[in-house]
Amino acid sequence: MDGIVAVTYRCNCKCLMCDTWKHPSPKGGEILPRHLEKLPRLTRLNITGGEPFIREDLDEILGVVKKKAKRVVISSNGLLTSRILDVMGRHRDVGIRLSFDGVGETHDAIRGVRGSHDRALETLRGLKSLGIRDLGIAVTISDRNAGELVPLFALARREGVELATAILHNAYYFHKEDNEIRDKALVGEGIEGLIRAYLASSSPKDWFRAYFTRGIVEHMHGRQRPLKCTMACDSFFVDPYGLLRPCNVMDFPFGNLGEAGFDAIWNGPQAAEARRRVACCPSNCWMIGSVGHLMRQQVWSPFAWIVRNKWLGHPEAA
Image 1 (spheres, rainbow, N blue to C red):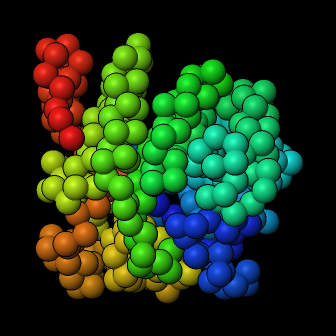
Image 2: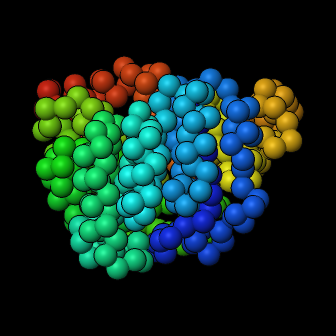
């Protein structure tokens, strides 16, 4: 089982695609480390926000969740350089992905913070100097940065880290309903260039990222996702208030870790209702949090795609 925990909705960015920063969770009302003791044994756990490193007790949180999950990865904007390096220096076995939504001014404009690209790059290099191995950057693809995807991949290669992808979308906790890809041809061209770069790489991980990124194209065009969503069956989302939800898109809490144990919630009637809603969900999302575990479980599907598109010379058109 995989999990995602948003430990705060407080954030120090003002991203164009997310208004969470306008709706911060109260410092005294966020999930406590002792509540996370209730989590089950997990294969992978993503710690996200908001900006997780704003939590003053993140050290304690990591101490708890590392005992629960084989792999823990934090999603961060990378702006709190000193704080990030201080915490990660004590948790070098934890992974981290820093947001890079473009190169230089493009990133700064999307993130709403002047100089944020340079600060994130400083943080990235500081993490490398600490010896953090599970390290990468992540881009949310939009009309504004589609032309910079291959340069971002080149940046990742130069820095010796991974590049992960997502695409602009709406979610209840973004407090946004107007996120939309407007020029699908332009964005599709940028994504296809990145897919070709992934497939040309010597790293098998990049080949699988090409498959995932291909799914982003399918999502953008409203096509059915190739791997059926199983959130609330083998993965879950916990918000900063301790509410257990199917994912970070569907606004349906089905229990609170501050009030009950995980097993009681997971096997309860509201969880069954959550699974029913997931089964008929119209969102057709394609995000690594709801796809990554399926790619591992059904590895023959991405592998067959890789064989066709990398070695057999039958690339799929957008």
